[in-house]
Length: 186
Image (tube, rainbow, N blue to C red; front, side):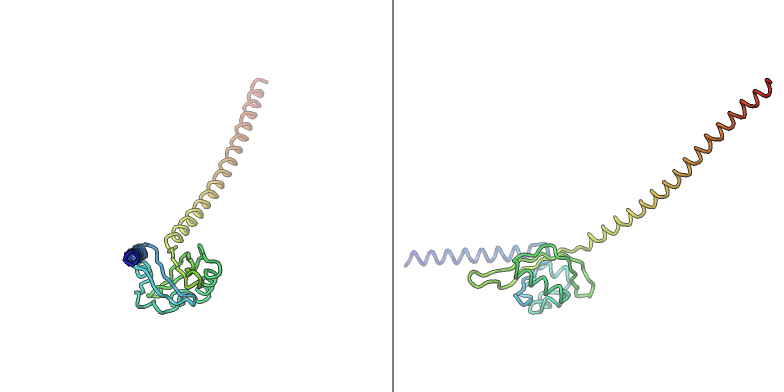
């Protein structure tokens, strides 16, 4: 009995340490995260979610994903996560508290309880704003580069045409010089 009490105490302490570890990791993670139940109700968000969206914990906990995600996308992502267990790189948009829209990639993982099935899902959101801005700049740079190449090709054609004309004129001058020399000699 004493031995069992010691084991129970040790296990309880281990569980407490594990809970603290998981909570610290959830809070520390720089990616916005939320945990939802199978119906899409938000049960928990991390500080990175609060920072990225402007919603505080009290704004979203107890609310549906549709508070900040388009209904169709929220439903599809949640259903796919529950069915397949894992969703990676689903592009969507989330609405911030100030109504601005963020393009994001969603990663989702279902959470299962042994013998009970899926009891929810973890969703993480990767903000694509900077990526899309850089892609836009690259496209603009490529377009400018394409225009410069076309301009250089035109200049090249003009230059080559001018060079060919110069060669023809030099040949004509040489022929005329030879003709003039023959006429003077003859």
